[in-house]
Image (cartoon, rainbow, N blue to C red):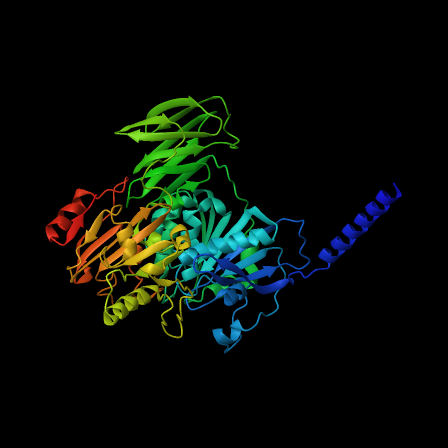
Length: 559
């Protein structure tokens, strides 16, 4: 007994000692600093700015502000800007980046992603924002109902895009002189359960103020809770006024309502198919699907849709929903009723809506992660693969390698202001592709089934092939294989004819990728389109695409 007693005392003392060592271990300092997360997109450590409040208490939940920087800027400057700390008189951004000045403490955690530099906030940079959000949540005790988003210029546009594609993450958003991606304004109604505050200078020569005025007007017409501050005689640097005296932290006092009575939501993509308690399950390719769903009295719900073929209502936890009791739903004027504990699913057959079992896509149909368009394959981890299967001459091999390297060179230098996009995907020969690559990455494949062994590997699964002799044509398309995409670029590369002009967020090689549909077939230049379009919902080629391809005489249709 004495031995057991002594052993117990020893264990207790050891636990106290270990606890003491852990408690005295290294902790993050309070105030502004820089952390990193590991990006699976290109196996790199990516930085982000972080502000930790004074007297940080790990047992307490903190509100979080995500701050998105503008073009030509970075995560360190963004962290300064959101606290109202502009450059000192005569100080350049390069000089201001080197240090963090003192500022008044706020009881918020603040994170500012680097997001690859100046590359907009779609694709890989967009994923970086979510990776930073996940990393901050992993490290700190974050109040998910008080998570906010703001940004300036390019970052203001990112605030609108990220805030409106996934609105149920945020309690409020605040875009400053925003330059949003094309088509973002179609999502204005997605802010129906968000508070939105715009800022802009009336003399802005870079991002005209008329754009923000149009946003505010449209949101007001749609019943969105939107406010707007326009600064008189202020040019593009309206963020100086917007964030002055740490104003934004006083305005960010909203609390997210995860179960609003009404949800208005629109999307073109399955990757953004859910908001609050509504999920879009059947989106027509290339069209904006819309839903307006609202609780009436009791378990009665009214739903209106547009360009939507299937949807689900995720009702578990909603205070207005009584689980296990009959519900009544009127969808586009059609009355339906049923009984569920959590999820009610609906599908449109012809012009009639019916209740179905919970949506569970089977087979090769378009869905999240397998929907296209072409840019979706470039928006997550991917590698570039050139062909060696036909034993090319040294000169031809170099030509193929040069094309693949050009496609992978997101980091082409764009001058001292825009700098480089800090994204570094791999380039490999077809014979160097590993099983781990097939399992983890989208494959961007150059060549034909004759020249590229990976294209040949999937030849019977792929729907079309460009004849090897078609020297003045280019074919580019995306197609799902197993759990990932392959994107085939045969003949002329997709950027043939591209011009490096204007104000690019990305190099000319990649600038048109977000504009492409599922397939592009061109002659001499990507601007000279023979045909383009979307695959059908079951990944078949529609006649509008098939007919001109067949007429060209240089395409083989396999399925």
